[in-house]
Length: 125
Image (cartoon, rainbow, N blue to C red; front, side, top):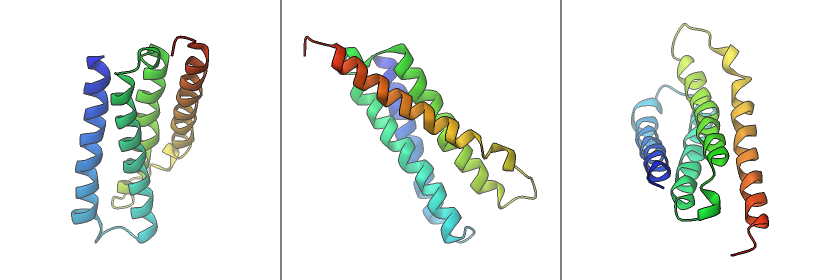
């Protein structure tokens, strides 16, 4: 239970910090399109961080597979977006990370699907 709150809270805190950083420091350097992409990564990190904290209170949602899908989904989805956006400010080419984003998104989708399956299977609640 503690792991869910610590992980979810860490992702939520990081999303908040990155949101402030994007608004105050990166806004002047990013195009509207890049800023929108960066904010998508932040938004999904916050949503799934909060979801992990909520899952800490739901017994059947505290599933190691759901946890891993959410954890790695956030890492691959959000962080690949952050790196791709910030890379636009550098001479480095990180375009190879482009395919990582949908893999992370797919993991998040699988995590939600598994949560729904576990909820359906749980006849006690």
